[in-house]
Length: 149
Image 1: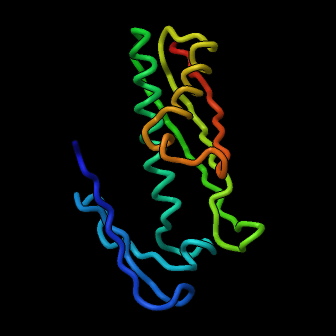
Image 2: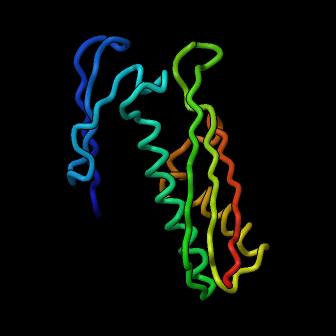
């Protein structure tokens, strides 16, 4: 088994404090994070943005795996994962409200029907998708299959 580790520091109150986000591997090191960078589009990192990037990478690998299981080689995949952060209507606490994938992929020999099925399978079946609670988070996907020339 492999353990992946994320590390965060924080000093101060929720709204005035600041912190950092890093990974044990060093790929991400001491990136600035604050209430403003998370909730108000100020410069700096946000956990949701990092989660979206990780989820997009997981999605891409799942999509490539689906094509491979059908004996097709993926030429390219570009996925953007957009997370909408809002507030719970009952508690007022921050809550991820939705996640939408936008995908462009070139998979020579794939049909539109295959591609749509693989998109859905990647959306619901990638490792990160499996840890999400479908009752509190709506995830959707839109894809564009690029035809080889």
